Length: 114
Image 1 (cartoon, rainbow, N blue to C red):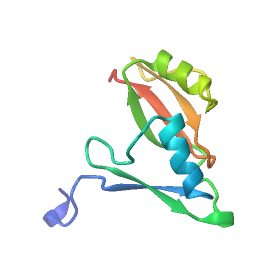
Image 2 (image 1 turned 60 degrees about the vertical axis):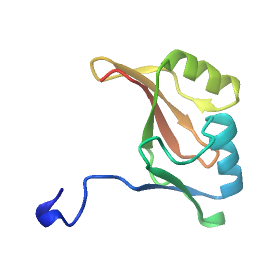
Image 3 (image 1 turned 120 degrees about the vertical axis):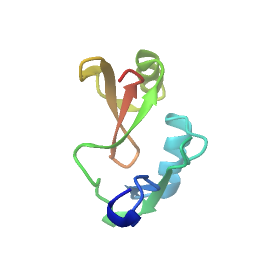
């Protein structure tokens, strides 16, 4: 915890900017395979509908998700029509790739090595 315990060391929500939240929900469910936008650790992915005012928040990844088999995850997402970068090395022992969601936001898919 931070000074005086005012703020906990825990992410609660990740806000994902989108133009069309229904389209984004469909992408996260059918392409990425997340049936629920609440992660195992309780962090929630919240789709924020900005309509025509939507712009991706960052040129880099908004967040990362782990995969037990990075090559199979890459192959599966590519087969589902997702826009994916090639698998690359991240750090000394990790591999991963970026995938672009339906709204133009980047997500890093990374293996479980640390």
